[in-house]
Length: 95
Picture 1 (cartoon, rainbow, N blue to C red):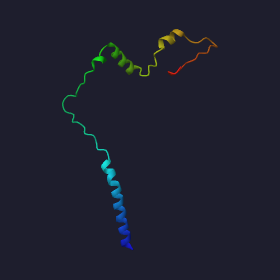
Picture 2: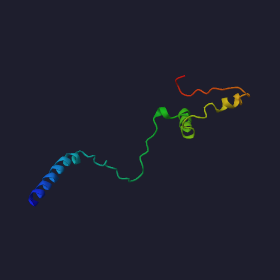
Picture 3: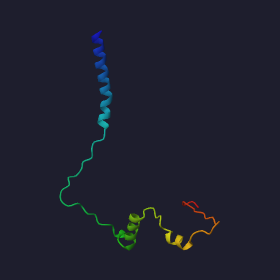
Picture 4: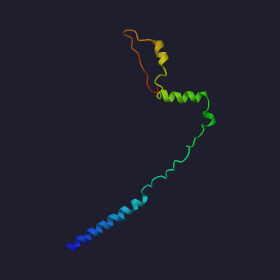
């Protein structure tokens, strides 16, 4: 009886290993990382990205990514609402 259990266990272990082996072959291999030797490679900006427009655009993204202050000056000119006056705020692109 003991031999049957050992053989059954060995058979199940071999079957499990046979099922798992293909998955190990398909597993992702780590990406080769280049050695960090010398100076880093500097890639110059394309010709169309040079200029004042792109400098301002990059600065805008770093300072106010969501462009939340776009209408700040216009809001200041409008002033606070009068007592009892309702104002509506539209949000989104589909209006």
